[in-house]
Length: 399
Image: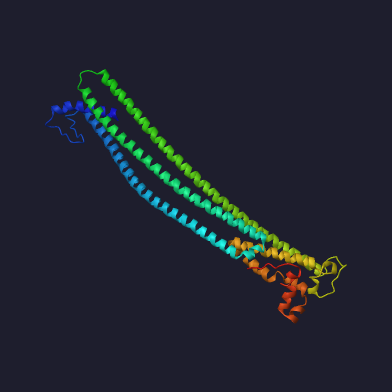
């Protein structure tokens, strides 16, 4: 840029001689509208071309400055909005932690109130204690994460503000230096053109200054490049953190989906097992098997709970009732843990609830004599709900 100014100065100096000869006819407006009859065309065209180039460059620079100014204003506004949003999210996160802690305390209180029920099942009691302990650790971990995030973000904002101030100071110093250098170069050019010979020391000084300016330019470029690299590295770190967070979320979803599918497969397996066991029970009770050594001569509802060595079908019946319990438990796990799946399979639950024991009823009261003579309560007692305690079991129920 300084070399270009020297050339312009030389052109103006040469053109000055012509202007002196035609001072009354020459216009001195800012856009060098020179009369080709006064100023030689080669000089006039060179000046016009230089002026056009510089005016276009100025226009581009001013446009860029306006855009940069608008971008700065927009960025400042965005920063305020993001800071406000961050503060709101921090407050929401803190409120969520407080709410979780409150819910945990309420759950502990409910567990204390249900102590009798919990103590009746040691495995469940231990599982609840373990769940409460892990929940307490989770509360502490989330609270620690939120606290550390707030601290880190605050420190980052402070450091970035200090960096921005230092960058602005460097930018102002650079602008001041460039303006001072330009003024000095203009005065040097004025000195040199007034001399009748080339001053070697002045020339050497100008060349040394040019080297300093080149070094300054290189330093500015390297600093700008380092700033860009820093921002890119920061963006990469942010992207890495986001990717890690997304991966952790994805892992949780995958684990959840696998457990859901596992529960669904378990239910299907138990349903198959139940109906297979039910079929074996029916074959045994209806005399379709090859075992003819022990034949029950009592009433059907008595035979099904009689020990096998006495001609009964107690072993097969117990297997059926245990299968029923496992099937109901599998259904209820899905209902309580995976409600979206349960909404799809609920119709199967209704079918099992109503008709799963129909084949047992067929064996237990084949001619409906028990039901017709004594009513549905007698049927339930001897061929329905009463069968579980009769073989030492507790019936699982749908709820």
